[in-house]
Length: 373
Image (tube, rainbow, N blue to C red; front, side):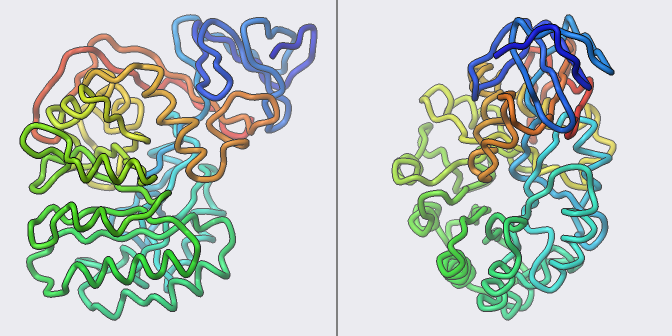
């Protein structure tokens, strides 16, 4: 859509604008009044209070990171989203369990309502969230289903769903099946989806874990090289494909142990693409060289063989829809919130996975961010 000879608050033109939701892909501009997009496309022009031109860059809707650790204290993994996400093109992110029922109120005030970055929470099944110094399920009673359900009922839209992992911890004696049972019960009773981190151990086989997940639940760490992963005998497991067929979503998060080029390349070659791409960014990534961010993670999927347009969609429109924000973010449609990310291409950008394996190809890097106009 276009408007001409108009007065805007902000007008940003770019050599390429891309929006999976509206189908834009080519030179153009986005016009903003207040906190709303009012026009976008190849024929948008006019006077504006602030005019920006990026002839050699890519303009996207603000990126949506569906698995991250935004926090300002209270989480052993947390990083300030306004410092470590927003300047890198990410305007919306979902916290993977940084708060539980006991520290939810503080998290809502300090992060969800206190940050410029739009933050939603997958409430941790553990009532302590990620506040303990070690493991959140060190005491099984922390997995308090009633308290989790009651907290969600009182919270409104700030809590998207429920997060929990059944990852192997040698010092814990709990049966991972009991954690899974309680998590699924809490999700069923609250009517919310799950952001699930798998076990990666044969004492609770992946096929058995997947059988518990429901349509709309999100399985994360999809391309991890850890044991009992999605690849078996050189192919994507049948159980993984069956889970997708019944509506389970697969998140291609990166993290410190969760992205292998060989696993991603095998899956992509078979046509099994992640539903979303995310960073799992937390404090262990601070100071990384090259920096760990969503544009760089997106670049790794392009290098692994995924079409560029599909990669862009899985960091904008697709996660926005999963979060229930599809008309507000992840789009350049007029009327949407004016969240924008500008990326530049670095042909010398370095790409490596968690095993240190490298791929050529260059990298998208953040150049500018617009949040709510």
